[in-house]
Length: 134
Image (cartoon, rainbow, N blue to C red; front, side):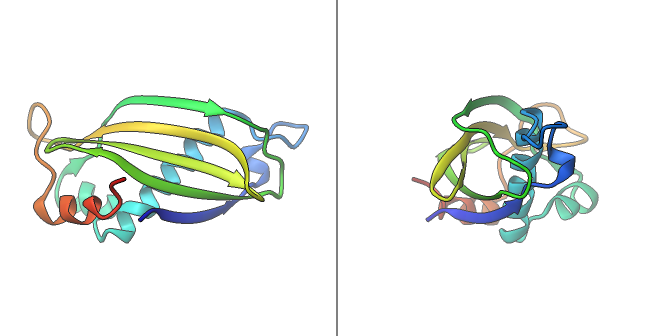
């Protein structure tokens, strides 16, 4: 199973020519991650404010295939490539009209804000994340 969400390219994402400014793809993918965690009933507001935990990025790789333009609707899909006790490798792909736009892989850990080092994913969260494992 994969998580899917669409995002409209807005002026804030673009350079003066109406093309997505490359760093904005990172912001869009972070929005996708935020939407996914919310869908897992473990949104960042709960994670950070209520449980003093977070998901630090440990490694990010990106490939850019084709440009995106102002007004495009990008279709994002998210999959879990690996799920370990304290980290997860997530893949996010963006396309528009079935044309590849970008692909990113995020290696995230789980941490408590008041503890040193990575912690184990909460059991209920890990169980829900496992549904997206490919």
